[in-house]
Image (tube, rainbow, N blue to C red; front, side):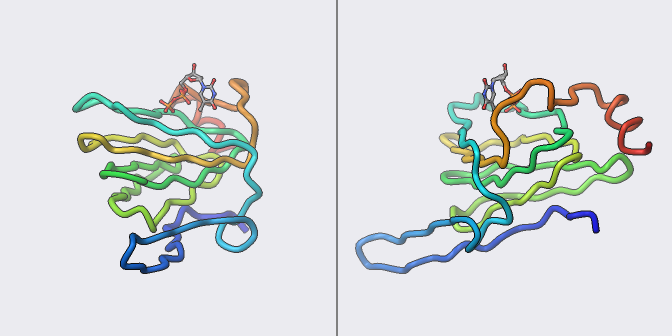
Length: 134
Ligand code: TYD
């Protein structure tokens, strides 16, 4: 069955010294982590992403600040807003994704189940629509 994008709520260990959250596989994540990267210092109004992946899945958290993630499955748009460090969005392969409305000093942490491979990117939306409707 096709996996769907969904928000995962992470553990939150409340502590008067400061809270703590975490994720690991297989406890919270649906995949084993192969790569971690982060997006930061995003100038106001900028958009990141605007592509899909043929094979890789990702899990995205707003470690700091907030931003929106727009997904498209070739037919309809799905919009998610991330603004807490204990929620993250799981995005399966083959979703067109766009990250936008970054707040000042926001920090997006992204973990992926694959190593970086430019050949896994689909950067043309029309090509994405053709591939997903095959
Ligand atoms: P890209 O994935 O297009 O960024 P975004 O989706 O956030 O807009 O990546 C931007 C550039 O960084 C591109 O030249 C590829 C490079 N890159 C790596 O070398 N390794 C990585 O893990 C990632 C995510 C990107």
